[in-house]
Image (cartoon, rainbow, N blue to C red; front, side, top):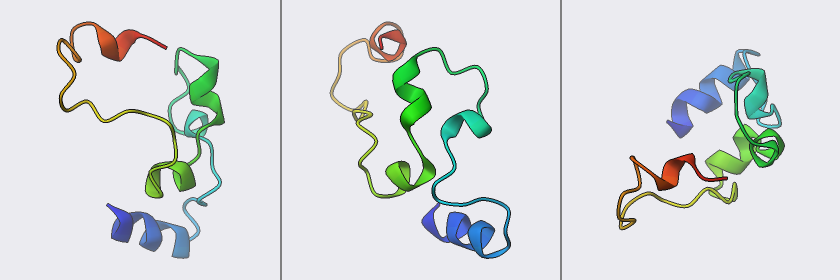
Length: 64
């Protein structure tokens, strides 16, 4: 993923400081609007890893 993002940045298709809302307009919570591609690539977005969370996909992934 990092390689593809880097190539897309070099081609001018995105920048690491683009916010997620540029690509995902319907994000439900304001906290998501602060997250950039750079945050995702450096694992500093604050989004927890889903592994190890009971009922993550059915319940917890919908929480802010």
